[in-house]
Image 1 (cartoon, rainbow, N blue to C red):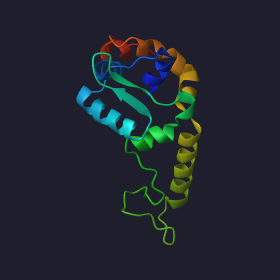
Image 2 (image 1 turned 30 degrees about the vertical axis):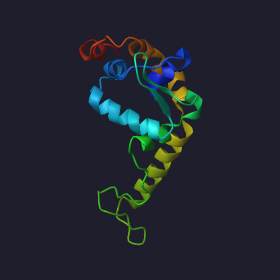
Image 3 (image 1 turned 135 degrees about the horizontal axis):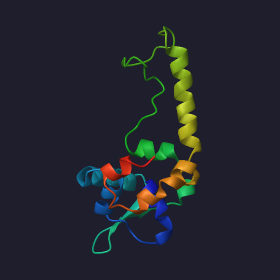
Image 4 (image 1 turned 90 degrees about the horizontal axis):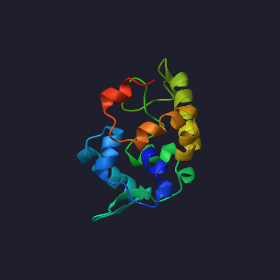
Length: 145
């Protein structure tokens, strides 16, 4: 989604193969993820010669939480730190208060940051060159800070 945000002003669609190469994600898996993003209304797809995917909204309108939820990450209020089926606030475990605070902070963070915010961070700016150059291999990109 960051790669698409980077190219959102290009008014062109990004091919799944190019996106997969830039993100180091298998194309078949990425295609499934992109279908989820399209179903959520975050991207639009186009078939054919100049086809691919593009953001359906401005990067500043897409929160990290929306992207995560569209990808299948659930912010479950009753998720237990120990992996139990449900957290029981009436009979809390030793981690209950700390874990509850952590979950709230994660939700707040994911709800408050957008794709545009990520692109504006120092690490976002520094890594834009890598995102713009999909031919960089995983080995070459791991040598950079």
